Length: 139
Length: 81
Image (cartoon, chains in turn purple, green):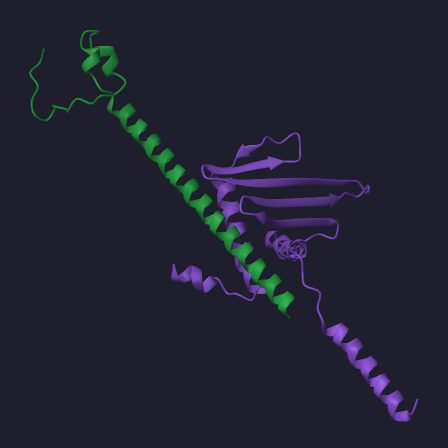
């Protein structure tokens, strides 16, 4: 193969490789939820080194909060709260047996609503490039 | 019984003491205004609470719906890119 041929081959190889690199793999819904959860985890203040948090919207009716803390003995303690939205209230279902599943009210309800509003605003702005704070002000 | 002058005159109130001075025959006609008021307050609070919950649920459905739509748009854009 001539020098020219070798050059074209090398060039084509490089171009194809860069094309492959540029072609992004589309994000799945699960990956997007994971990214949203990362944003959601920061709503509740800074994380401690031994702490992991998740907070995300799963679907029209479900929100999840998960917290995991590893104590000094290396034992992990965790709780998962599933908030189920019903027309007549928000039902909190806990993974812990010592916590009753109940419709939230009062301060807990207000705190949950605030958290979802912050989540919505941050996720839309940081992940989906949409500023919804202006929409809210307009309402 | 001493005669009441205007300064001593008090408008009767339907308080707890009413039960003790009102005979059994008169009782059905007495309305404890305090209890009625308290009942109304509780009813109003329950109504306001229900309205708040209803409003909150509707808002949460709307938020979730918008997030769902944003995810779909993002996935479509990524596919098209």
